[in-house]
Amino acid sequence: MAANPPALRLNHVSFGPADARILDTIDLQLDAGHFLGIVGPNGAGKSTLLHIICGLLQASDGHVDLFGECLSRSSRRRLLSQVRFLPQRQESMSSMPVKVRNVVGMGLDDYHKALWFARRNNEQIAHALALTGMQKHAEKDFRALSGGQQQRVRLARALVSSPKILLLDEPAAALDARAQASLYELLRKLCDDTGMSVVMVEHDIAAISDFVNSVACLNRKIHHHAMRGETIPDHVWRDMYGEHMHIVAHDAHCIGCVHPEDKP
Image (cartoon, rainbow, N blue to C red; front, side, top):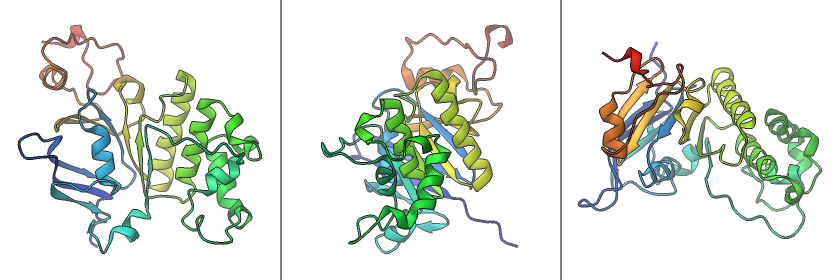
């Protein structure tokens, strides 16, 4: 029996002019259920890479495969219907009141059709709110929620259509440490229980290391792709952040971290 194709494959993906690449020859593959963290300095191309995967930008060279099929003009709508993206900069909601359940309903493909009513999809909306711990707030005005609560509602909106791939750009930025861990636990559970693949940009490698399957170190190109239990060499961090950096390992479980006593 043939193996299932990877959920995502980037094939020599580059972006930007040839003499000033923002991304340069990116090769990456994720199987179903894989949780990937992407780390790197500001301006490294992390958000650009997510935008290319979800079709908001087109690669200058190379191509993206989703579920074993090349993302093209003819396949774009069908393939991207199974991908959801939670961007770093969130949109400003209307000054008009809108209920939380309706914000979540915006994540459904038929939301913008004429005569759409949330009650048609009550079960899906309720399930997405339950996953993110926001079910008690379904009838509240979205504007009245805290920043962290609004982020959870946005995540519910991304999850309501049960995507096969979820892309997140620093989703925990508005959350405290406890809420961050809760979010990462939820994403880990979704990967394990549903086979959803997650690609998440984050700055703190230690915070995500207990939850992700691997970490890609990105600065224009992928300098290293570390699987759980693998050490990331010091030169990789210096290649990404510069020779001036001082490397301090502060978490024994951190992917890629090495404590001074463990060094030869």
